[in-house]
Length: 314
Ligand code: HEM
Image (cartoon, rainbow, N blue to C red; front, top):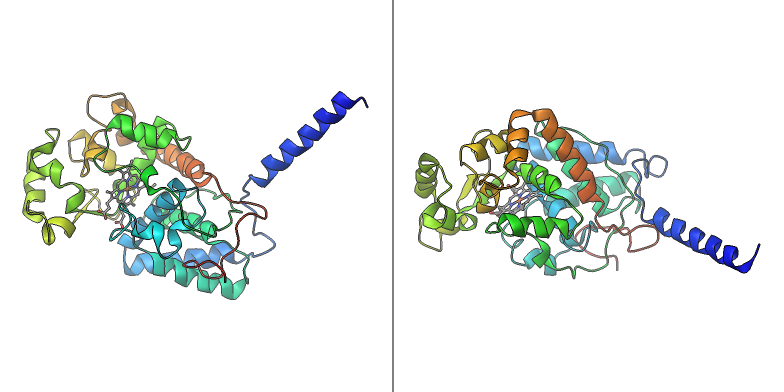
């Protein structure tokens, strides 16, 4: 072999090694921890049956994990990321994940990462609330710090262009973005996150819907004006379905960032399609969830498998 082809071969081997280490696999724990998936599922099912909102909270935790420095369970570490703007006083479900981790550790010691538990818990939450299932690629490892930039998370005041930019930064396209926003078919939001929308900031809002929200959310800042809750999907708040999109068609999106998806713009047709065609939404949502779960995972020997999801190993 001449030296040029020898070098190309080396480059090829090096490239495929990189690709292999970044590759997740749905059978990652098939031999190392065959009971992992069933253990996570029973933990999620129990938590959601005693508090249906928990399904929404776990799904959101996975999103906030993946958008900040990749799906590396950094969001689960006490401190930094949890106390940052969009997360503080808002994220829920940490103790549910900690309990599931304890149960998983009891069946397989230091084998299953917290990042994978969160990705599977997000899927099982959707299923527990009547939504679609999908196969979750596995093999993520856990970060050893939480130093990510929570500024990568989109804000509820975002314009359509800002949402597109935030998702495109994570290699998610506009269809992925519209489909993933469908997660707002479950769960709740605090008044402070939509107050400007219901007090004059937005004109693209159904007036009866607005009046009902104003009764729930006083205009004054502080107290219940900030933290009272309203369902993100006013029609079927605890069911994972496509009603989020029909709400948008009647200008009943709760957040400004919800209604911008149907506001005489380029995403209107996708919203119409998802509202009328549940199968199209299911297919786009499950595809986009797998893509989101693939954002910059730690693999191979990177990071660690935490013993407890809320702290790095000592
Ligand atoms: C498109 C950009 C997005 C924005 C601006 C956004 C913003 C928000 C805000 C402000 C809340 C309410 C938080 C609170 O009041 O405490 C919320 C809740 C929620 N978000 Fe998003 N979100 C977005 C995308 C997503 C995505 C991609 C997912 C998951 C795939 C998701 C899942 C959820 C869920 C399930 C809740 C309810 C959580 C609960 O009830 O505990 N969101 N979101």
